[in-house]
Image (cartoon, rainbow, N blue to C red; front, side, top):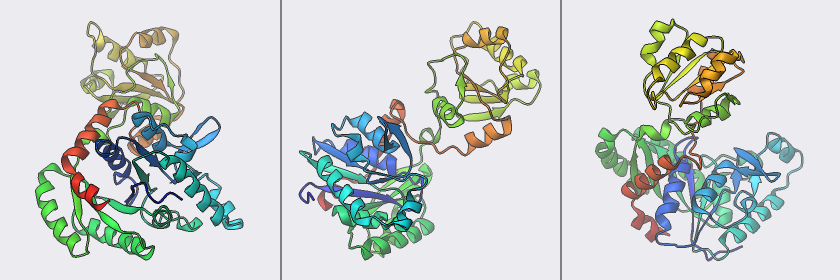
Length: 364
């Protein structure tokens, strides 16, 4: 396997700590030093099907943003399907999986100046099929960076657990990145987290302030999560949702919630609320509403559908009832998507301004 191309392995202490955000921004920052960059997510757990191949969704994001000129199947060699673990435990094929990762890395690293390797969670994720993140980092011969959520006590405790597993595998940890720190606490957290990490022999590479925009879903991502139908084919699916309101009140009370960034969830037979939203938008280019989700698979009348088709904001029809829709929206894991150009630029700036890139380059 290629041992010459510089590489780094990005891990986290838990799901949704900001690993993909860090990887995305770090690739952009390192691209200024390494003109030809590569990316691989050796073991992926959330995938989409492209040309009959199961490809991790983060791999798709990186490829579309950076145009990496490498087959997607090599950047995402192992997709953990629902029955992957059961099959492995029935007939372990560890050596075959390792060879698949090594060969994929060789192809990803071909004629590249640098390769970023993204893990799939904390150091132990994948242990059940003998490919924990720590093990994969060792297989790839990569040094690791650990991303954790902001704070002092709990993040350092969790980093220590991950540190132990990486060290057991002989993987060097370059340092730690603290993410989602309240802006007013960045200075305080930076000072004391650096002290705490130093006691563990670890470097603090940067503290990323919490930016609400990165946690806000788009209407399109909600449509995909709900498997909802678009009733007006609005081109405004990239609108960000700031707040959610369940339209279970009278029209007179609902009108006050027609504010910028609000997603209204209401049964499909509440045509009065749809008409009220249309009236509020009348004569204006945009009401600012993020959109409306009609629930219960209750399709409005043809007259109301005509009104909907003329609205400037998206209107979706979902099969679930209002409670289920609201729950799914509330629990939605917000992932950056290739079309989220505004978010992507925010991420680039966030990483460049708050990470010690020279220290990372020196460590590599």
